[in-house]
Structures are given as structure tokens and as C-alpha cells.
Image 1: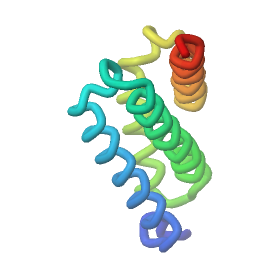
Image 2: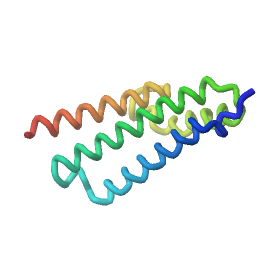
Image 3: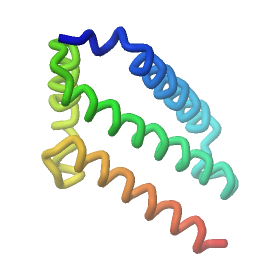
Image 4: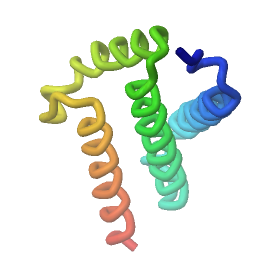
Amino acid sequence: MTDFFDSDIVRGEAREMEELQTKAMQLTMEKPLYGTKEQALDYIGTIRSLIEKQQIFYTRMKLSDDPRAKDMTRNIEDGARLLYGWWGTEDVRKLMGAMLSKLDEFEAELEARG
């Protein structure tokens, strides 16, 4: 059995996700969706990167035999259940995919505005 969370790779990915979350919060405080097009695109890009990293991290945890990773995947799945109805899916990976699709729509709307 491996200790999933002691891996240097996992710790590095967790740090990257934390940095993206911090940046997203900072951008949210700056109200990017009401700011310039560039601010909104930066915000969308940050959220997209965060979700993509979360997808990979979740998948790695799901495949791990580490009991702590399995516990965390269950916690993520339990938390995501609150969002399932709104997003129309009952799978965390599909939920994340739906979120990415919505970001694509937002980005296309911004680009169409010129």
C-alpha cells in the first residue's frame, strides 16, 4: 500500500491547487465578471485550470489503494451530491466536465462581445 499524500508529486499538485484557489478568491474579490474582458478571461482561465487539476487529483485518489485517499474521494463525492441536481449529473467527473463546459460557454460569450 502506498501513502498517497506523502508523495512529492501529490504534495506539489496540492500546492498548485491551493495557489489557484487563492488566485481565484483574489480575482473574485476584484469582481472580474464586472470588470474588463481581460479580467473576466483571467478569472475563467484560473477556474478552468483549477478544475482540470482537481479532475486529475480526484482520479488519482480514486485509483489509489491508500485508505486516506479513498476517504477523501468519498468526502468529495458526498460534498458534490449537493451540486448534482443543479448540474444534472451524479458523477464527480461528469460534474467537473459540466463545469468546464459552462466555462467554455462563458468564455465564448465574452469573446463574442468583442
